[in-house]
Length: 295
Ligand SMILES: NC(=O)c1ccc[n+]([C@@H]2O[C@H](COP(=O)([O-])OP(=O)(O)OC[C@H]3O[C@@H](n4cnc5c(N)ncnc54)[C@H](OP(=O)(O)O)[C@@H]3O)[C@@H](O)[C@H]2O)c1
Image 1: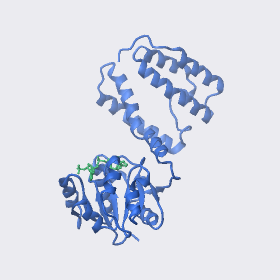
Image 2: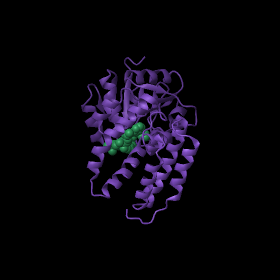
Image 3: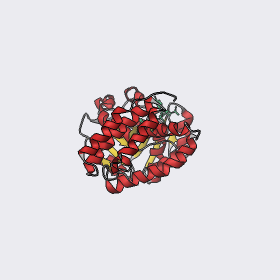
């Protein structure tokens, strides 16, 4: 089904590079690449045997399947600026953008779809390594759907499906396991900095612990795999935390309260604390108010 399929990319950024290199490494035919900056396209094409950098329209004309891997805001204008044909397919890789953003190609007879890898793409080498085992959310009608599913399989990825109209909700949910982790680390690092430690020291100490937490979630699930004092019903530790944070920063204390309240619900769900303990911890979180703001 994918043998001989000529694949093209428009947008040689973080995801475009990682996906093109991954397809090529899987033995697929990445035929052409274009980007707003010709040097980016040439650099990517140079790393893939049989791939050429060319103009955007030439990519569409030379390929059977085109990946529009521009930033989200450029998907609709780029698609609308090109001539499409009935025997070509075009997909975007945005999690939040509806597939209808490619409506201009569909109106000219092309097949359209979404191919969103639930993965973080920064450094292409790291992205190449992290893609196998990742999940790709596919949204397309047949026969394009079967081709995209086959491609995901050739990358060693799992396939996820979404009901129509759910992309914004789905993408917001992904943020909790992606960029919001950065926000959590930022908060912890700010607290470490209050006694003079550096961000690097904080990260070095906390990353192995975070990996342990992820492993625990993987083996035991979200509620049962949760560590920390709330999971043990240890109200007195929570009290010490809020007193310490109240002296430091109202923002950090508020953030702690919100997250700690979520962990109370998880501890109740896993059965490790009863309703009385849950109420006592909630009262501790509510009663402590900040007395100064040094951060
Ligand atoms: N990065 C991720 O972790 C990730 C994860 C999942 C999905 N995605 C999705 O993947 C898509 C691309 O994201 P990205 O992170 O790879 O963005 P990116 O790193 O900013 O790369 C996009 C590249 O497209 C090129 N470009 C910009 N405007 C263009 C235009 N009008 N026509 C042609 N090329 C254009 C630019 O390359 P030059 O200026 O160098 O030519 C730019 O570097 C987005 O839809 C995003 O939502 C990204």
